[in-house]
Image (cartoon, rainbow, N blue to C red; front, side, top):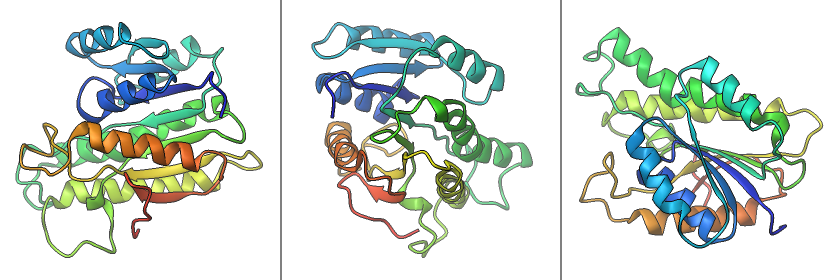
Length: 233
């Protein structure tokens, strides 16, 4: 791969998104990281001063179509080797379909499944033909084949929906050669994963970055974990 690689990491305020931006930057990638608030902006500004590639900070709420369109216009001159959409919210209620309010359920599916695809489609023609990758932060909980309990059913269903929509996206790229991936990062010690999770953010994103570099140019759609292993849909 070329040394002048550009990535957009959507949702780089904290956790896995921030960790992935840091990992890519340390490998010499130039990174555009999007945040929603000033706290996220400050974290990325600190990261910008560390060795590696360039880091550009942009503000984006992925549920706002006007903001997506404005970001696309601001970045229109750049061709990206990677568009990585990291988005995910969990219901504040018990997380079951019967207990959540209709508004809460709609918000989970919009943020976790629909909005990430809208962002990806906005940048599809700016992804480098050949080595370019569009990736979505999914979850092992999004595997329908492996779903054997009722834990966090709304969140799980929203990630399964994201996986399905990623397949539709991969089928719609036409004659362009773009790799589309749904990525399960493992159980990671983040605000969502909790302190008892076995993986650190650094371990997960290191594996994700390795996997992305191996997958570049394959043109293969897949649901893979942070080690590059296939996950059952």
